[in-house]
Length: 192
Image 1 (cartoon, rainbow, N blue to C red):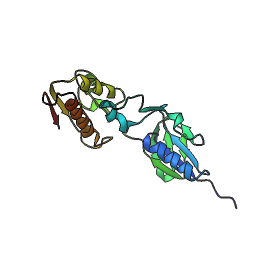
Image 2: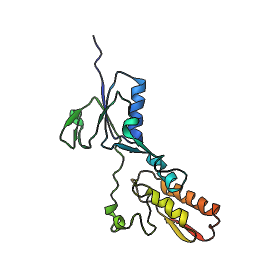
Image 3: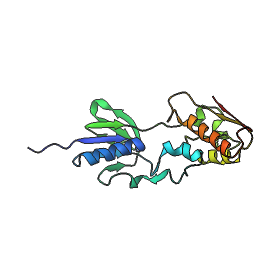
């Protein structure tokens, strides 16, 4: 009697989803693995604070998604919009339904800067930075390089956030930068 193939559906192609997919493939070549991820680019977001701190570039934290997913894993380039766990199915943005035996859900968080009034209009200018966004992370390093006096405010939003340690990590990197350039007495570093 032939063994039935087990299907595993993974929603999310960030560091977690790609790692799970590739590790499962290494452990069992017979698994039918499908990864649902709409993005062509893969950003190693844990590295974004290092980009903001100047020790890494955005280019170093960016890969083509196709280069990270094992060729035997089926990649569906769409968004999952709903889950039907009682039927072992998900629905994609196109309306297509995918079935699975096992489901791994790791889509990450969707940042909505518009939830804070006025934030979208201010990000990326006038010293307002964010290390959680590919569109703004390089601006953090630009500001830190040019800040030689004044106040540097670092904030940590309430949960859920992508990485609770990131706001502190960038603050420590910035404080070290100010120390190295001899401006730590002129820059008042505060954390809220």
